[in-house]
Image (cartoon, rainbow, N blue to C red):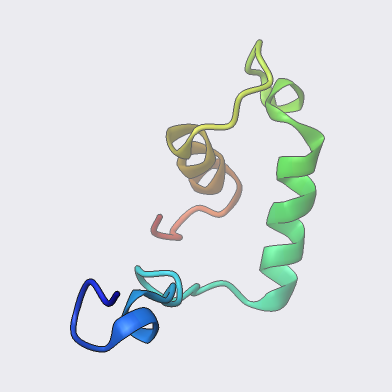
Length: 67
């Protein structure tokens, strides 16, 4: 029973929303390594990455980059 016009196809998952990544592949790899090291290695006492912490880390490590 279709819930909307278009049936199951209309309910299928779409691609992730939001802006496209502006980082080069090498920058993505560097960010992954930094995040894998964990928040404690950057001075936070717990092991919880938050968007605020990630943004702060990017501002610290890549001045002039917008996040």
